[in-house]
Image (tube, rainbow, N blue to C red; front, side, top):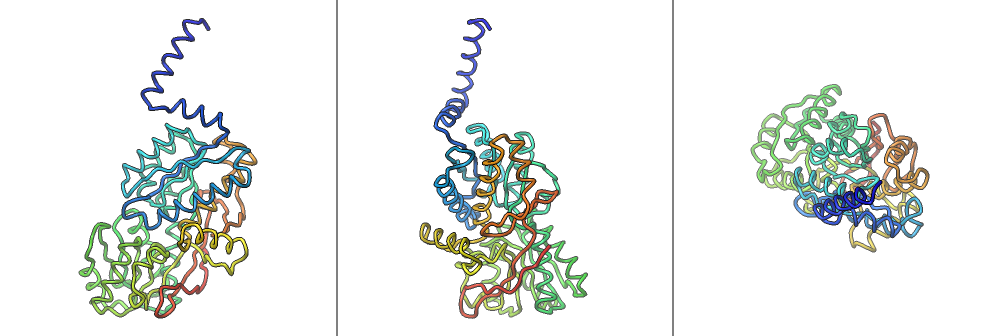
Length: 386
């Protein structure tokens, strides 16, 4: 190569770096400092932060603990966080920014299905392995070989909600209320089928928009239809609102509710008397009596963040350690990391045991809970396997 051509190439590269901020130089500095930088798309602010905060904290803790154990692939781990708020377009732009700025070997995607569906085409283009926690079945039906779900799919959640309402509580006239989006609607349809297959009746199905502040009309319809139990498929804040409305309206029937409402951050929004007839599901039974590793995680999290950890966050903690195990073995080549995650079988984390199936699903069970009377405390009932 002539010196003129070499100079021209350097000029082009410098111009590109100036256009993109300091992308090229930040990558070089990261390499020189011996870091492995990965991205994390987190709903830090906005209405999705009920679970996002836990995800954010869990990855911070995982980063520090992993670095204390030698980092990943012999280098220091650096997790670059981007706030995806409650917007699909913000989530896509955050993903593109991380890919452009740090060229990561892996990305932790959002914990919300709608954001992940919007981002999924960009993952295909980038060909970067990603962990995600959104439960919507629409995601794994994409059969994207670069994406791996680290919590139960919503099909499992629908199974657990419907089985507990009919078999666990013995109810025969089920009303279903759900948030109208790619999370709620498929879950409601799946729950309806399982209820009917069990020999019970679905007396009504009512939807609401995530931005709605009053679902009383939908709840009244289900009461009038003769529902003796409600299945509620919601996020944290809207689910808490539904429980408050039920109390205010004097609708005194059992509710079996989705995992977003059962995590500590959401339960703390709800008065104990509004939880009196609530049963629900969570991704796992996260309790210190499950063993010393789980007990250590819970204590460390509470000591550092002054909060109870929940499975929405701890699944990302587990995913970070799975990433370390894979990268320590195969390095940071994206295709090798992807193949290493595909090969995970029986990995015991603090949240669950992880085994990757052909659709990229890694968790295949849910825990069912009631609430201790007069408190917000969950009481473990049983685990339901897919």
